Length: 302
Image (cartoon, rainbow, N blue to C red; front, side, top):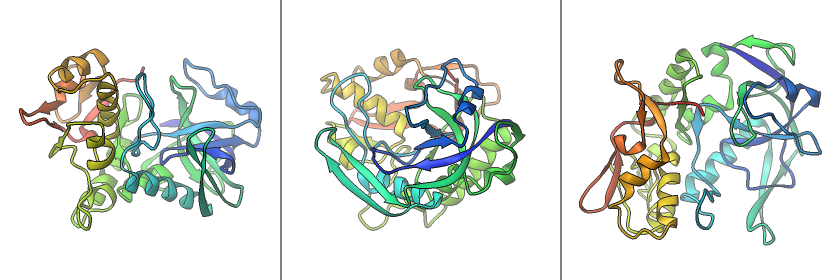
């Protein structure tokens, strides 16, 4: 799969609320942002940085507002661990969190201020971020040119590392090639295998992924404190609860209205499906579960 390679550096100090799947990046030549494809043109900040969203993965939310209600986060145990794992893998150390009362978020700083690396991108997303595979150190080719990305190179990215550590969920969109999806799925399955790593490990305090087994949802704390679930499902539930809903009776209709479009990879004949209500079950007791693991769902890019 040809992807645009951009060489530069990852910057951290002074940034608020980075998370396990997004990191600020400044190209050595800022003009190379203009080469990134997508229907949403990238607009770098004054220092030249743009937030890079790691492709193919979704880490637990550390600060999600959405369209309704106050900002919420998933259980910090794995959200913070994913952030620390990403930054450590890139080459940062002595990671420090300081609460910023003005923004209401943690400000994260580390040593050194910047680390060299590169991104491999197919384009931008609707939020103005560069969606990419993230690499550290010397790039595998010249900056500003496309290179063919194979599984061997994918294995050397932070995207693959976080799935291998069980600190993110595989989340695929339609433009991401099948051979790269299969490699990230393999990394996920290996992390999930007993004894599971990261979100797949339910020993100790017992807090671990319940996306397929089900989370009992009675209030916002059910998904912010009590249960670890797929971030996309968390986002939909958070917005639904933020509307003041105290019952799950209307959740299927809400999920249908959100109109997430996807294909089921486990069904080769699967037509395009609209709405997560097609892969979410709600029991009479208020337990919400997904019927397919995230690696079997291929979302349609917007």
